[in-house]
Structures are given as structure tokens and as C-alpha cells.
Image 1 (cartoon, rainbow, N blue to C red):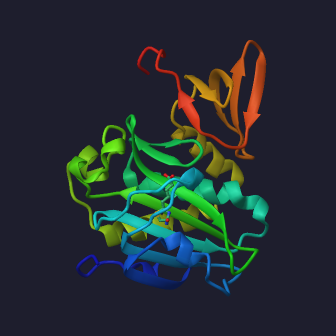
Image 2: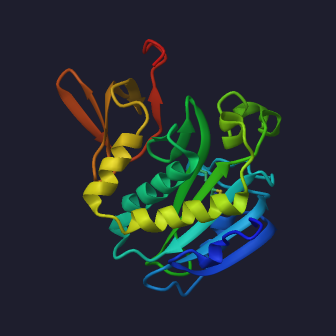
Length: 247
Ligand code: BTN
């Protein structure tokens, strides 16, 4: 907690908070929660995760007290707002990370060419109308802390900015910015999202298709164009080509 500072319990929109020292996965726990109020959100956070989960069934390293491990449960007007929730959480994380933070579609937060965080959206098991939005953000981690297989591609706010951050303050910042972006107009939120997107104009590959990455539509689909043909993708991964003049 920030000495004399804010706690997430007091952030507008937060209905209830679960805090753990140690849990397998905040998303796994959050998926069991019900009932979820129509407005507002439930918040689950922990000091460390023993079995953090990432995209495509991958493990997400979070067995550390140096990160933000957070899940929020919200009840959108429809499950069609899946992308809008992902976008609001990514924008909230970027606001807290600073000007250099970028969104690598569909779920990653980058600073420079390295990943500082990731997002995992899932449906609730307890309440079919709810979405669980989880985010992991490396805050005070040093390079030696990351598992060897991600050491060359992972970073943290400390490594990029040289200053330790109070994790409760980061938590409050992400949750309050998420709440603001979630209620922002579609046009403004998407314009800001596009400005935060990493790699527009670069050569990229999704699946078997490669070409120029044109960005992401307001429905959440990424666009890759080649020789006058644009193709649209609901899911990644998106990979940038190494032969792209180092950009
Ligand atoms: C990814 O980069 O593949 C997504 C990572 C999502 C990690 C967060 S940490 C909090 C929440 N609980 C989990 O088990 N996963 C998400």
C-alpha cells in the first residue's frame, strides 16, 4: 500500500476486492465469482501467482512480488464488447506505463521492443454474462528474475525507467484508467488505441499471410495488406518481420 495513499477499494467503480498473498491464478479465481453487479467491477489481486496463465494456454511467469497481477470481472451490456474491454484495459495499462508504452495487438503491452505485460480475457464460469479481464505487468522485476526462455524479450517498468514503483499505486492507476476508458466514447477510445498500437506500417505475418500491418479496426480485427488485398484477423499472434530495416 502507498503510505497515506490510495487503495484500490476506493477507486470509482470498484464494488469489491479480493486480495491474496499467494494464489494459483487470479483469473481462475475470478471466473468463479458471482453475482457481479451490472455496473462496477470486482477486483482480484495477489502478491504472487503460482500458476499464472497466458494466451494460447501458455504459462505466464508471475511467481514474484515485483509485478501487478490483477483480474477484473465486469458485466458488459453484451459479450460483443469483448474487444472494447480488452482495449480499455490495454489503454489503462499504457496510461500507467507512460508515453513509451505500446500495444502489440492483440494482448501485449510493450515498451520498446520488449514485452512488459500481457492481457488474458476469459468468460466467467459462474456468470455467463460476465467477462474476466486479467493483466500481468512487470513492475519492479530485474532481468535475472525472468525465466531463461523469455529473458531476452521481457522487460519491466524498473528496467525501462530506472525507478521502482509502488505496486498498489500501479494497481489503482490501472483500475481507474480502465474504468475511464471503458466508459469513454467508442471514437475517442479507438483513436487513442490506434495511437498506442505498435508497428503500424511494418511488414508482418499472421498465420500464413504476410504484408503491411495496417492496424486494427474498431471491431478488434487486425488488417494486413499485400498487393492490393487486405485480410482481416480476429486473433494473433502477430509477428513482425525481421527484415524491416530494424524498425
Ligand atoms: C499473456 O501475456 O499471454 C497474457 C498474460 C495474462 C496474465 C494475467 S496475470 C493476472 C491474470 N491471472 C492469470 O492467470 N493470467 C492473467
